[in-house]
Amino acid sequence: VIWKSPSGTLGAASEVAVVALAMHGDDAAYGELVRRRQSAIRNLLRHLTRDADLADDLSQQAFVLGWKSIRSLKSPAAFGAWIRKLAVNCWLQHARRRKHEVALSEALLDVPVIPSVGEQMDLNAALATLAPEARLCVVLAYSEGMSHAEISDSTAMPLGTVKSHITRGAARLRDLLKAYGDRNDE
Amino acid sequence: MVIAMTNEFDAKLTRLFADAREPLDEAEFLTALLARIERARRARLWRQTLIVAAVLTVAALNLPAALNQIALWVHSFGEFSSAYAEFAVTPWGWVMSMLIGAWALFRTRPARR
Image 1 (tube, each protein chain N blue to C red):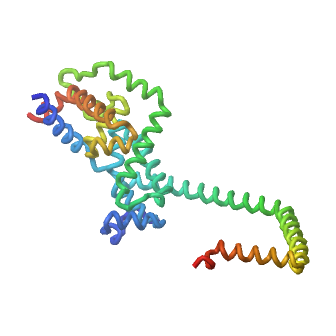
Image 2 (cartoon, helix red, strand yellow):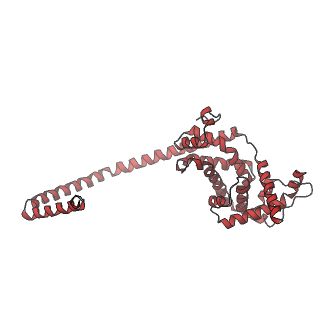
Image 3 (spheres, chains in turn purple, blue):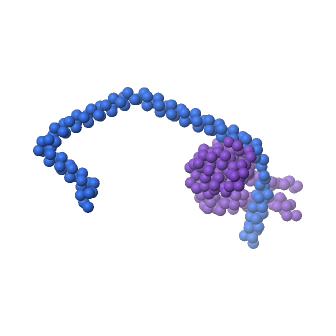
């Protein structure tokens, strides 16, 4: 399996065609899919974990799971959403294993995190102050461009809960990132 | 007013997320992932080998008993068939055979057409 450089044919092929090949056990095709999607998945998990190493570890878990179960994919066109769901599930499992960390994140909700004068709150730091479920909803909505219904379907959270998480999460980010936004607008 | 602020902020937040997307170096990631997949592939191969070995072992251990059981069934069927053959040549056996044949024809529908 040569994964390190894209082969001409696979590199130019449509994603649906590459997914179909991967579903029939073509490892080179799966490698091409990983190459195309790795950046998006790793960025998504970096927003969720705020830890580059952990994000890469969880991304690899998701891609290994994808490699094992790609034959169960119902439609080649659904690959993007499917691998993203695997990545989110890997993160949720990790979060459940680290209940203390989750509890700490929830506790942070009650602590006002306001950047001091001159300090610039970055996006991931602001996201880290949200509860895991709220962080997930906000990231899927704003980073991945998913609709509320898609997020509800993908995370198995009720639609109302998703809307509430996004509204409250965005409001909290608005407070935290105000200085950042103002500075960027100047 | 509140809605306008929210929409304005939504656009800003979307832009912030877009700005935060950084192109990541793929070489190291792909190398580590490939190693993981190779490990998973080897583990799967071992698991499949163990399952096949276990199935073959269980089959080999149970083969004599299974063969005995099959021999018993064949023997019983043979005894039943010879008893039925003796009964079938009597008048009552002939009637029973005809009834069974008619019932079978009826069940398989050709008689209904």
